[in-house]
Image (cartoon, rainbow, N blue to C red; front, side, top):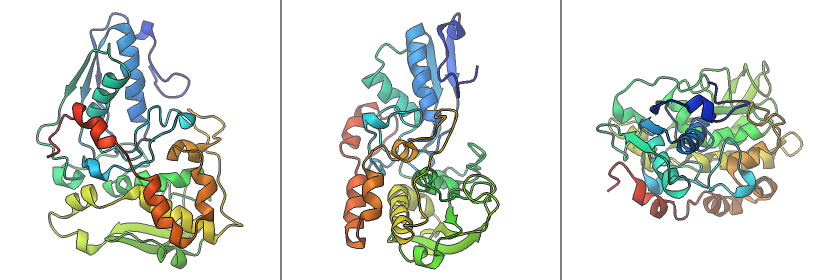
Length: 321
């Protein structure tokens, strides 16, 4: 039974006669990565059918530091299959913990069991697990791509490429008309390197065209042995980085930059894709008009995940002390 496209959740007939459903799917820690919402729909369907749902949990690749969660929280006007509930863009939970939250807040009749990850340390990102990275989807080939995805995926609501079809999707963004050196100098994010690059995407906007843009990477200071996993979990703010780059591109290239539809199986027209990604309807109108001096405080306000740590404390499955 496919749970993407015409059908987002199994029917009662699909679940009839089952003792339990096992959910064993990885995640990348971003609200708009759709696997979490497959779990949301499955939880509700199993609750309606009285079927046990067993979640085989996985580490959050970006770590589980709740102070590193980044909003905005989703507003009701922006609900879709890339966001059904008011959680932050970078949520810092595992899928098992999200299931616990949704049972508590929305689906009290659900029969839910979470098989936790042995030995996972929420204070550290994926490299600390010493496990190989297995691509969670074709456009997520590496931990590097996953690190920047919560921020650079916002460009998928624009006419700027996120380097799909290259070896570094979501770690690069660009377009034929971008001033890459100017863009590289615009980012204010200690410990993060923003390097001018050119690349040729093989999917999405500017497919087959040479794009100028930037590549994101961690500064050498963050790559000392043992530091990388902690730096990503505690210090890197990918959503803030993405919004800063969006502001720089949109304000520097007003004649070329545009918000754009992004048709998918879950949203055939692709309309309002950026609003669905960021979770608010007002950001697109305000972002390009910000002055450079306004940018830092405005982005900080947008990305604040107010109340998230307090809201999630009762459902945590891993020690955050």
